[in-house]
Length: 211
Image 1 (tube, rainbow, N blue to C red):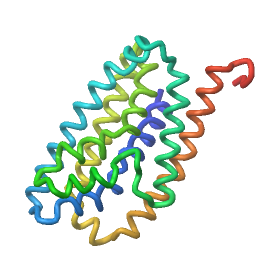
Image 2 (cartoon, rainbow, N blue to C red; image 1 turned 180 degrees about the vertical axis):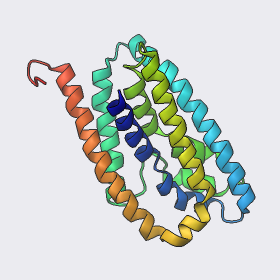
Image 3 (cartoon, one colour; image 1 turned 90 degrees about the horizontal axis):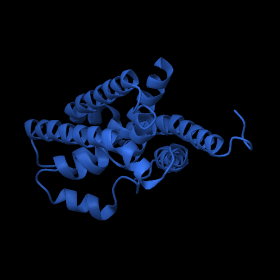
Image 4 (tube, one colour; image 1 turned 45 degrees about the vertical axis):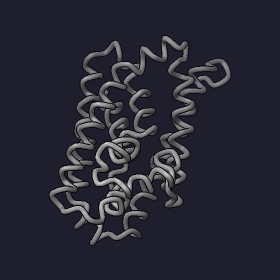
């Protein structure tokens, strides 16, 4: 269970990508004071936590209702996370998180806490897929479910602290430093996403891909 929780925490933290959100956060709040930025960060993390918690509860039953196996979603989730990893490695703006039109709309807002900060930057498709992949099998294991929730809480707390320190971190690291760190995280996420696909294929075709 410890290995499973650690694996989930690493994937979740990399997908949320708090360091990668910093340049966007700063760019979308050029006229905001530090107090206003921190207020938006708190609100965004709270909303993202609600979204992720609700999805952790209803995601698994929804898949069952639709007749979608967890292995099928594991394959899709692995492919989705792999695309995010490619964007991170090549330091590109991920189309799985926000589009250029969405970022432009965000610049016109005085409060970006709900959109695009909470969703889709923090609780985006990658984070939701990661939640579903891990919480789906844990539905009937209360101890594992609580452990996963604790990992989400710690990850979001780290994201909040990162957003709180966005301005000084940006001054120290700059865009280049943030991109270098994201590239390293992208390599890790890419390897984990491939493992998700392999596990999904192995679960779907056990005779062709024995464990």
